[in-house]
Image (tube, rainbow, N blue to C red):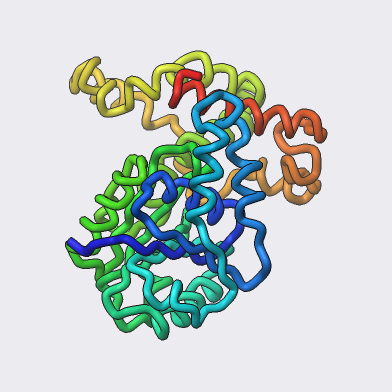
Amino acid sequence: MAKVEKVLIAGGGLMGKNIAFVVSSVKEFDITVYDINDVDVPAGIRVSTQQLVDKGIVTPEELEERLSRIHFTKDLDSDRVKNADLVIEAVFENMDLKRETFAKLEARCRKDCIFCTNSSVMSPSEISRDLQYRNRFVGTHFWNPGHLIPLVEVVRTDATDDDTANTVMEFMARIGKKPALCNKDVPGFIANRLQHALWREAISIVENGIADAATVDMAIKNSFGLRLPQLAPLENSDMVGTQLTYNIHNYVLNYIEDSHKPSPVLDKMLAEGKMGFKSGEGFYKWNDEKIAKCNADLNTYLIKMLYNK
């Protein structure tokens, strides 16, 4: 497998900063963040990791030491770009922008440099379509918040070779992530397909007047949602037995939502300008205080789950 020492993060937004922080957990890595704009990478990381410092998971001294090893450049022709062993792209979710970014990188980076695209939905095969060395390209879907959620989906393109996939899987494990290899480049990869299958049914229950949004969320949080971190669906199937799983599916799947289009509820919400956090109303009503509490509560929960702090 290829040796990785010099890591380039292409894109200095929130996700790019958080990825840089995660990579800095390994002292041997030389890390560079590239962006076309001036980005205060240390300041952004300090904001994201404040709760980790407050909880004593990362000491202030450790944080500053890690920040000292993260460099920044606006120069695409710098040696830090040209000599990268592995690039993780974290620009906006725009196909043309991603293709343009990788075209520029391929013209500058070494032929053996591994390219990774951080996208939650876009096909890495399509993103890499016009590259010359497509065998060294993979998708790497970091989940938000990137410095806390352990999962990274490593997605093979239609041209990814085994050495590239294995190198990236090993790299992700080394920086403390839980890499999941997605063998086929399919829409949604692994976890988003599962997540949105649940969302579709949850929204359908509201659409059909079976229960309101608050009741749906409460039911999930206080039943199978509570045990999911310990007992995942396929483990649960084995626990209750294949016959019972079959019998339940033979009955209930006839009644579960299987629409291939977004719910009319979402159409109505869009027409009414109910954009969730952005507008102050979606399935729930939101103000700045509630939004801040929701975000902080999520991070607090994740830190408790991951670090018992």
